[in-house]
Length: 383
Ligand code: SOE
Image (cartoon, rainbow, N blue to C red):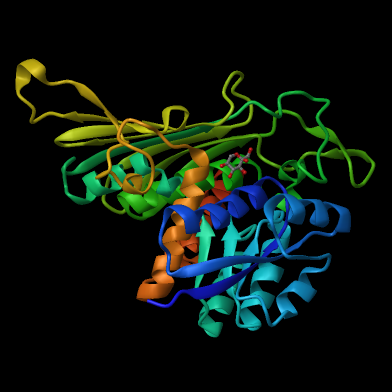
């Protein structure tokens, strides 16, 4: 079959710009997507930063104004890897210009902002997706397979945590490159929108919709120097967030995220307990899935640790030989491979903007519940 070309225009050249660019480069080599991805242009406000990024990652050209990038007729896909406050404006303009849109998570700073983005891509009829990359870790994909096969039976409990420790120092400023995640005006929220959003996305994909939540949040350091404003300012993000939840299927959940868990850098863990068995996964050991099956013969029954590296495990047939593992960056490559396959087959890649809106409804409910100190029903909307 003749290969098609897909010209990518990336906005933003920070950490996420790198993960996405790596995916664009590698997907062609390890998957057979039917598309030649061309790294057409990268856009950043600083021309020097954009040029240096273009040189490193192989982008053909640079822009310093995302509006100019969106207006270019030679761009097919706008990929958004900028701070959260800019997602909506760029995505809506890109959709109106008829471009496909890929957006870093969370979709918007609130469900209202995300809903406008969903409306724009759906009105334009353009392919779209949100980079909730952890779904594409092979062990997590295997968990999905096992849950869908009904291996766990009725689900009783879901438990997720995302723990970090990088903001404990009171000397750490807020705002600006790298630190906008501490500035609620830019990020939308703290760990709720940044870390719990991942946990919620995976949870609803694995276990269905979340009906209601009861949350608490805390801001441990109340004032920080703001690098853009140049003064000490109140901190308005949530430093830590924990909530109880009830899923539509009747199962109960606990979720916790913090940037104050000394010693933990990016410890995302999840566990599901069902009638017949349980599964557990841990980002620090991401190629393993722990599984317990109560139907195993009694004397050998116990937790098994599956090394998810066999060629019949999800995505692994594309990589090395059984026993050799892959890592974090591959989850983005897998998501891009699925997106390109979706373009070929006409199947929408998940999570689409509409599906990601569901997560924003939950994070909105979590923040409201913490503020009002009461249970909150999650608003409907999203896929
Ligand atoms: C925050 O430190 C962060 O980089 C998140 O923004 C990412 O989404 C997460 O995958 C890792 O941690």
